[in-house]
Length: 78
Image (tube, rainbow, N blue to C red; front, side, top):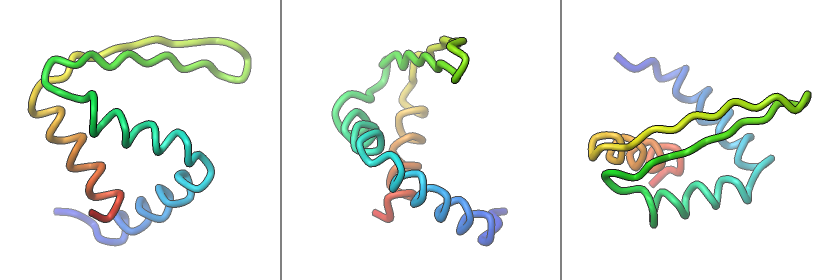
């Protein structure tokens, strides 16, 4: 069962994150709408302030794509 209070808190945090990083959020929306399909490989590298990096990737299946699209719709208020 979903906790409405936690969902509202998450939404508030998402809005704040989007305000701090509008170009990043537009980029994520663009790739979700145009590039995320069954078989897409998401490849991510994260570098911390000290210059250390961590790399990972995942090959998406149809269920993953549907989940990401639903999360995007939910967070964007669509």
